[in-house]
Every structure is written in structure tokens, then in C-alpha cells.
Amino acid sequence: MTAQVKDFAYLINTIGIGKIISPIIYLIMTLALVYFLWGVLGIFNDKDREVAKTRILYGIIGLFVMSAVWGLVALVENTFNLDNRPVNTGGSSAGTGGVYGPEPDYQGQIEDIMEDTIGGSSPY
Image (cartoon, rainbow, N blue to C red):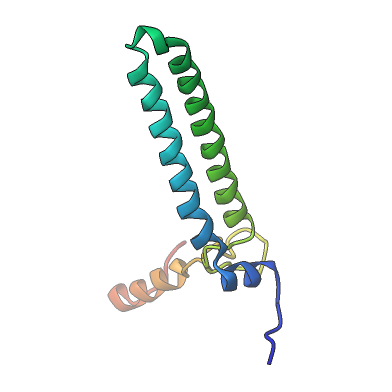
């Protein structure tokens, strides 16, 4: 029996791409940091100074590229709602609610309190 793919977000959540990519990004960023630090420590050795400068440069480039990839992964997750947050798709006029659901009815609560306390309705 095969499962139907409902949409892109369902496919990604089912496979768990974020659970696979995030540890790989952390690993590569750690390797880039270690490579950078290896270059920093090698700069004090006179005979390996040029090699150390190259390691520092490539380490910085690696950290920058992996930070950009990490940002792109976060952008894709937020764009396609891959982090399983509830999204309110109803209503687009002001006051109908935000991303996380409808706003509470404060006016109704105020009127209830006014009715209970002074026996009248709110002037608002």
C-alpha cells in the first residue's frame, strides 16, 4: 500500500529532511571552524605561514557558506511551514487573526464584565 503525497510540506515532514540536513550542517560548520583554528595556530610557525593563511581564508569562506546554507534551510522551512506550526488560512481582513489563529474577542469579554459589575454595557 502506498501513501499519497498531499503537498510538498507533507513530503518533507514525512521524510524528515530537516532532521537529516541540520546535523550535516552542524558537522560541516564544525569542520570549517576546526580548519580555521588549525590555520590560526599554524600562523605562528614561520615555515608554514603561507599555508596557514590559506587555511584561515578557506575556513572563513567555509563558515560563511555554511551559515548561508543554514539561513536558506531556515528560509525554506518558514516559507513552506515545515516546522509544523498551525497556520490560520481563513479571513484576510483586519482583526480576523494572525498566523497562529484568530484573535480573542476582548470586546465580548469587556461587555460581560461590565454587565456583571455595574449592570450596564460598555460605552466602547
